[in-house]
Length: 230
Ligand SMILES: [Zn+2]
Image (tube, rainbow, N blue to C red; front, top):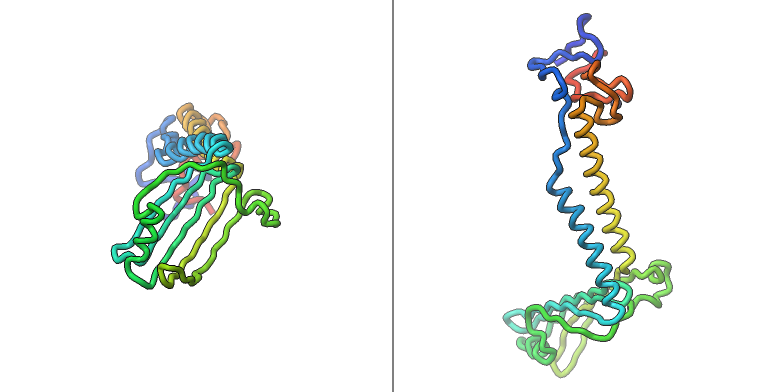
């Protein structure tokens, strides 16, 4: 729909159903998005959780372990998350025995057949701290072992052991950035809503009572233009 005839003035677009005149011409977009609110609240909660883990990890390491032995009893999986001294350490293990039932025996010896477990040990340092690279010194590290084969009294088995470490400072940085971004967006939306309700430009705050269609100060349209004069 293009209406750019001689009668069409710049900034004054004719529409099939023109919105009512007055302050409510400017869309009010200051309703708070629930997702945004949850994200910002979650980020702030996570910062507190990470700080608490950082303090606790200096004295005690908490191991949160999840295990699973398959019904045939030849595969065993474990995921460990450790509240370490300087960061969160996580590992993923997988075992596959040639002989059915051997994984179950192995898991029973460890008392780790299936489900969740929590244990505490002395503080756990970052195992990648001596890795030598810049990222290792900064507290990051990971190791993907690939599948290896070995033999024991349980017979031949294949296994892999992957593990990684993320420092507390990086987690706090990420959650702070996410939280700050969300909080700033919330405040910016509220400000735009206040300005729109007061008949001012949502972008720059200029008084729009004389020019409700487009802000003469910053050029922002109060509503998306259906068409513009060429
Ligand atoms: Zn403006």
